[in-house]
Length: 129
Image (cartoon, rainbow, N blue to C red):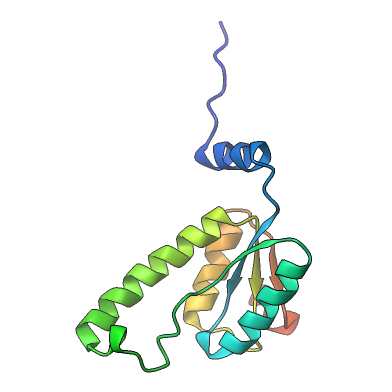
């Protein structure tokens, strides 16, 4: 007797994207020091018909939402979790900038562990190159 194979959550998501006729989804990763470059990459990726998700907060810039250090640290943890969810949602990753810090390096490793293709605006910074 054979049993039908159950779909993984990733396979279910891929099937749902196909059923909804969604364009490819690209997540932009990189240091928030490159927010201007991320916005430019967003424009270019959108122009070719992709859905773009990227960091929504630049915690390196002063803002009342993260002015309290304790609240800022908790927010950073939540934003890191949120960005990993964006990576899971995306079909591919675009790393922006000519510098890779620890957070971005971890995001690249996470994306690759999920089998996501990773592109770089500056391929020379690819930690696995």
